[in-house]
Amino acid sequence: MAVVDELSDALARDVLAAQDEMDNDRFYLEVAKVLSTLSPSMEEGFLTAIRIRMAERRGREFLDKRMAAHRKG
Image 1 (cartoon, rainbow, N blue to C red):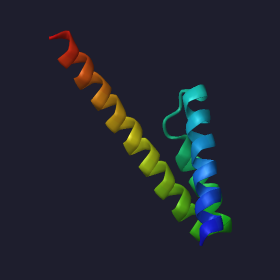
Image 2 (cartoon, rainbow, N blue to C red; image 1 turned 135 degrees about the horizontal axis):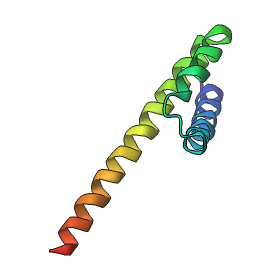
Image 3 (cartoon, rainbow, N blue to C red; image 1 turned 120 degrees about the vertical axis):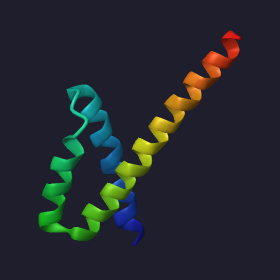
């Protein structure tokens, strides 16, 4: 369902920004728990979006570090 995917991804982006601001890397679990009481489909979409975005962040950090080391010589 496209609406669930769109809403889940938008919420995931906002939650990740909030986590950064609060310095709380587990906040998304609290949000997921709230979602689970109302919509398991939304919870699933949200957790998928969170995992994808967190993985992308981690991969990008790795790439940036490796490229910085490579450029130093």
